[in-house]
Image 1 (cartoon, rainbow, N blue to C red):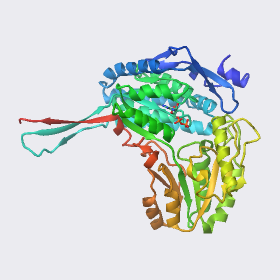
Image 2: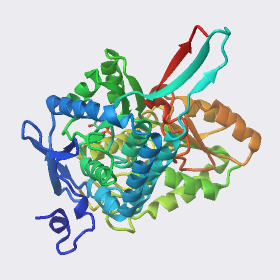
Image 3: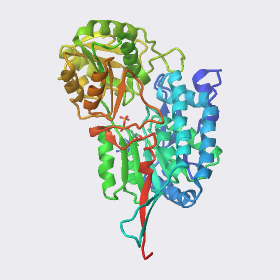
Image 4: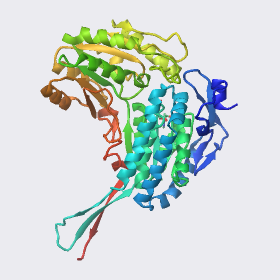
Length: 494
Ligand code: ADP
């Protein structure tokens, strides 16, 4: 039975031509050596969507060797040739936007409108880096001695590993692979076990676009540990780019130390969303809803703590609770839905635990607070008031549709509360007072600051965190740097 028929009776989904059940190595569909497979499950229904091969260290080594072979010729193509192939890939992704979006929603639970947006967002990195790849120039540097000349070259680092999460099954892959490919690197991708199907579809479209076999490889695995050990310890891999949880990121950094790999880490966040008393409250409410509840609260840049100044607290909280109680909950395939399921039962249990802890310590529920009547992995969009710093929701990344609201008196308290975390990814605040905007933005210890805006990621801006939220930047003109080595050549005896 086909995937579409299995799930929707007679309704043939448009994504069937992009559903593949094998790993992708050297431009071929590949089984695991062990013959083992694992299930990909629809978080909305609990149905098994497909089974894909469960690759081990030896399979991963094979993919790395393939990528190493492909690197020898890919790095020697001209930037313009690579540009054209990446543009073809970009176009094929755009052409398949609805199919890719449906596939993504099926395996991740993401509301369909957001999946449609993610396809465009993910594709935008390919277009951007295709262009940037043509502008990777070295320098001729003025020399301190007249008999010498100094030149720099930028060269691709080599074979790169990309380990990606399930919450952006497409964009986290393109944000890493597009700069790698644009400058001449090849890649081995380890997608999240929950969302390998989108990764496999992307890889097939790369081949259809004319990107040579072996340049893009996808190793599917039911857990990251064994594949991750091979990707980090194998000396052929020169760079590892990871998006996921902070504990796994730290582990990968440790494992990468013995072979001194370049590492980029996009890790957890604990984003403050500050509403000052001079803010446009309606705009702040709108921004908070978008920032908090996007992807059912499951992004690393989602507002994690909403801090509201005392004088506007009542107005903000009343309007915010009202807006949240109107969010439609249901399967992401329903185009009217704003809140889908969380990814799995463990995630559901975790967020229920966070809510219970807050309520036990004195917080109050304004909206939601427990699992949704739909059952399964559905949780009610929730607003908690009276939240304090000792509660787990203040310290941990929530990754679910729960908004804890705090109050503060003045700017200094807001900044201290906002910075009171080991994380430093995204932050947001709303104010119409220009000196305050400038001063607060400078003092926030975060890699990214949204000023009167709740969504800040795009392909031209440098995305990344400080403190324990990560290393390196993705997107923007800086996003290629980690995929390049700078070589200095000194020409003497002139
Ligand atoms: P999340 O909690 O969002 O699932 P993880 O950090 O566990 O975040 O997962 C992000 C990615 O890291 C996934 O592709 C996952 O399979 C992978 N992963 C998890 N554990 C390891 C590990 N020990 N080594 C390498 N990759 C891992």
